[in-house]
Length: 127
Image 1 (cartoon, helix red, strand yellow):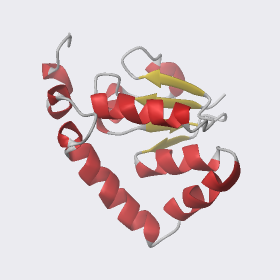
Image 2 (cartoon, rainbow, N blue to C red; image 1 turned 180 degrees about the vertical axis):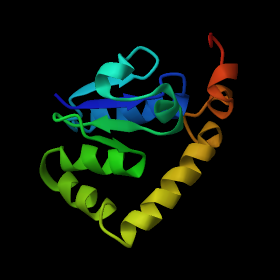
Image 3 (cartoon, rainbow, N blue to C red; image 1 turned 45 degrees about the vertical axis):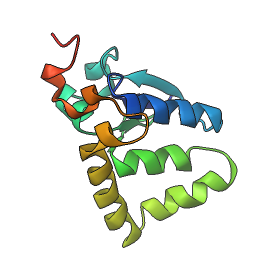
Image 4 (tube, one colour; image 1 turned 120 degrees about the horizontal axis):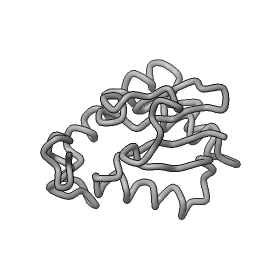
């Protein structure tokens, strides 16, 4: 079973996951990294704090824009085309930059919260 691992403390990320559900894309299991069994998925906390993670059936991990692309490739119908394009240079290079920019400013985007802009250790409820 594929697994999509996102930042459950981020309002923007949580809104994006709800958008995936509304579009009836097929991400398999969707879980916030804060409650996931990261070692069994082959992930670290640092990886999950930095980027969205996609773990394929065989355990292959894709991060950031590649995770978005894998989600689309795994989805039905026409969603596969943009997924393939996001993995193809030179569009993949642009997608990586856009993902990095969005991740860096997610607290200022629609659905974002001030907690999104804080380092994970400073977010409400952090241990």
